[in-house]
Length: 94
Image (cartoon, rainbow, N blue to C red; front, top):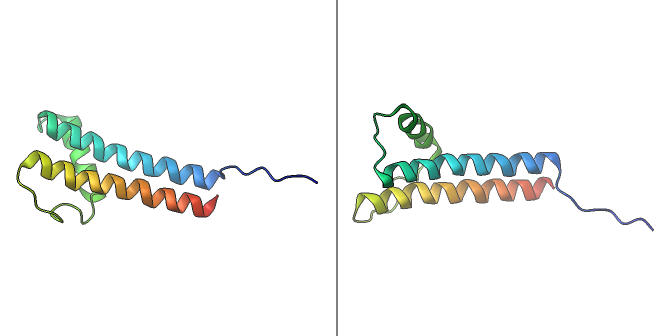
């Protein structure tokens, strides 16, 4: 009897990669804000513009004291959401 080798399909790998890239953009934005990277910089403004729509409804969902903790919570939750969502979708396609 031949045993079927269980591996990840191409679609599943693509979904996992997309989830990682979306989360990476959000994490880079978090790092720029927390380290005080100048917002006038072209790279920082581009990353911020890309991170805004990716954050979905998470900014302002939970209010905490302090700007650093607020950014970490808002965009960190969004990054975790994208990784989990794409992981579940990838699992469905594998």
